[in-house]
Length: 270
Image (cartoon, rainbow, N blue to C red; front, side, top):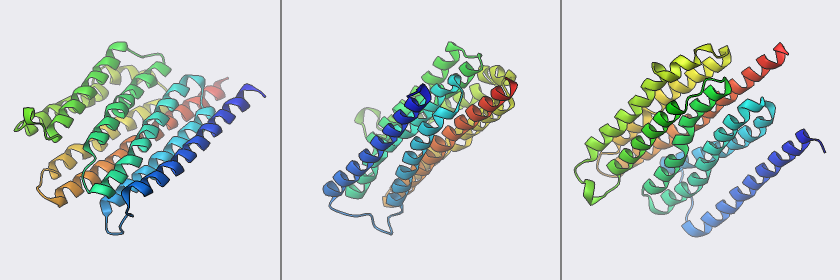
């Protein structure tokens, strides 16, 4: 068995394991909630759609990893990790919602605390693939993403120590997000990607657009979620779920696009 066949077999085995985990989680959740998703529960529907999209994206990225150049494989692995981790958390978040009707705040932020820094690291990995990576840039983006998430969690969590500080913390989180956007559009990252291939530059810009426009859905959901009552909670969760699908799946697809285009360009030059 050659290396290519062995790698493909390993990927298929992993995909099969994910499928079994999906069946196991559905069976377990069905016993724990003692209820089914209602047709009128649009929040629950959005949780189920997000769960399915995350799993499908993970399988796709794992399989496509075999079709790109070696220098892009780590980026594809990270893209699969982002959607895979999100899928795992969504299997629990959707059942938490169906069982309680409450926002799965802690589980959502645990998911973000893992996946958002991974997404930010993709920009570093793309630059590394073209030989223009900077460790300083990585730590700038990573640090800003952590500040954004911690401030966001404290602004939403009902913690006595930060009572009355919701809006200032929300603003701090938005400023950290704005700093990430600045670095991508006019900062060091923008300068370093200038010499990359056309496909890589397009994907880099598309990923920056996702972080600019797609991530704007989160503060919008936060603001709408400040309304008292169930309607505010519903809008917040629907918007968060939509944002996660767009920002994780579409983001990974841009990584795949850059990897595919660069691999084709490299093959044609040989």
